[in-house]
Length: 255
Ligand code: CO8
Image (tube, rainbow, N blue to C red; front, side, top):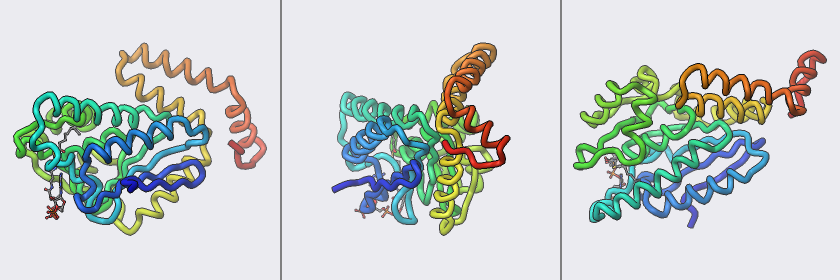
């Protein structure tokens, strides 16, 4: 049975993680299915964006599956983490904007999954935490690296070493999420994102994501040179001509 529901509107795909009996906790099967779904999306030429959310109202993802992890040896834990990290890398490098729509609990691996998306929206019942130290482990799904890059090292270490839960408003204040919405605004928010992503130049969105992501790991001058290359490349295809002509002709661009 599928653990991920997939719907698509105008090239924007919504992936809904659906393992209700464990509050969508990430076990081997769910991680493998996410990997397969992402591999198929990589080959989707008309893809404009991806929204990742959790089924129901209570949880985005309540972490990695603790029952599955408890008896692992260090070698098995390393394998589990490395498989999962490969899937997250796939998500992070999808060439389209990706948004985590965090409904309810995003704990441990759930928070780390949200961090692998380009940005995040929280519903007003969301809670975030990295509670791993309370289980006698550290975050192993990228949390020690992506969380400090998102909120700064001091705030990341506050969350990681206390394991404390923060609500949606605190997540907004520290920059872990970009917006907070009411839980019942979920569908409308996805519809709005779909409208926005589908009216923009698809190649421009891809290039913008590449510039931001690749630039993060470079010094400023190299990163600006990368931006200039990608900016110039944008003038090589039909998209730029159509976008600018549409503006000048006072019509909607047909991308
Ligand atoms: N793993 C396995 N099962 C879980 C998990 C989980 N992370 N979270 C919830 N469940 C299960 C519960 O065991 C329960 O099952 P059952 O009905 O069979 O008893 C069911 O989901 C419902 O949960 P609760 O009854 O506990 O619901 P509550 O409303 O009382 O509490 C909470 C909800 C607060 C979310 C609570 O379930 C909880 O604290 N869950 C664990 C949260 C946690 O510690 N997450 C971090 C896990 S560690 C981690 O993510 C490490 C990531 C690094 C791994 C690297 C490789 C992937």
